[in-house]
Image: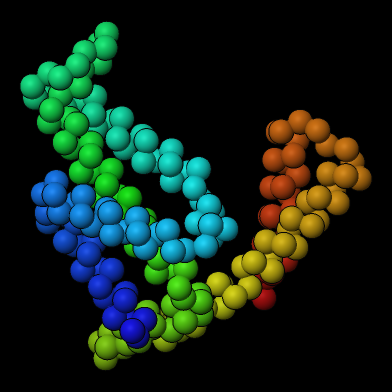
Length: 190
């Protein structure tokens, strides 16, 4: 299936998620997405797992405790209601499905191909003067060279930390900031 169609289907899915609040449909989509996620290599899936889990947990907890409705359980000043439980489930699963769809889409596609497909999708905007080609060319170069820049900064950072025996977190952050700023200034000057 062409990548442009995959991106279009993902966009349609995202819009559909916000237009629908049916628990059964959300559960079916959740199960289908989970099935597709199982097929992705574990090494790719575990990237970003901790922040995603924290974000989904925060979403669930903030929705379950702060909604009005029929009280199901009360813990001190925290109240769990039926409406809160339903909203927490819907909103958390909605975000999970969007993240899972993005993971599935990016795991099956090289970043350069993804940028080219987005460029093809937005190409008609060039007729009204939007510089789509330049934007996506810049985006492609950024995606290509960002890992190289990151590796150079990390290597220089490790050398500096090792040579000067910097131990505290704040001192390490200052060293990192220094390297990042110097590197950025060096490569952005004309």
